[in-house]
Image (tube, rainbow, N blue to C red):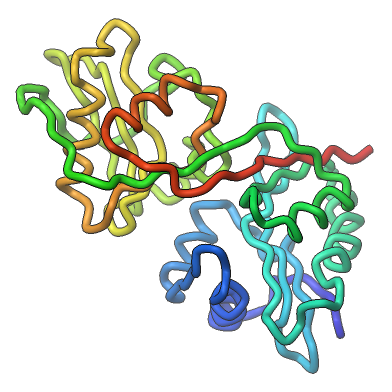
Length: 277
């Protein structure tokens, strides 16, 4: 078994290994090469920072690492850890971390982030043993019925996200962050809700998958149906059920709003962080 970075590994090989590793996951995942390229772009995945385990030249285990400077701190994000069925039981995830951490330390990167599904007890135990600590609990929700809303709000596409801190107090997770959306701007639909010429609400989503990355309404315009109208508009545009991921469990206004629209909880996650000395 050889451990090395993925900087010289073809996209097709990474995609094939990812699909095999996640074929029997809690929620099976499958990417085309185009979809994997979009994931790599949007989540800031750096092949030189990502690592793989190769058995006789075949990629059988991997950690895809996204990279960004967050609040002035060089940060790594685990954008996907997987081991194909034939490679499981050999401790490859722990081995890949033991291999990658010194490489990342050489680059001055000491902060690591990831999310793990809350009932994936095996993975959670591994991350605990490596040194990750839970920092918050997240949930994902899926729409279960058509959303009804008034149609008199002006909602139209916009070219860029506003200062989102004015619209919501919830800190988005890595995949939903404004930097991630801007990295893959062409892959996202950005919408603004307007009162005259003033943007008073916004949303960002992926039309093909129905994934809502961000949404918010200015405090003075809440409880007027603006948020409901935005979600109805996204539902009409998307070719799939709306899914809202990585909602902070402590941000009750968002959870109550989604439940009022008929969204149902899909799964729970732990956001975990490791800070190395």
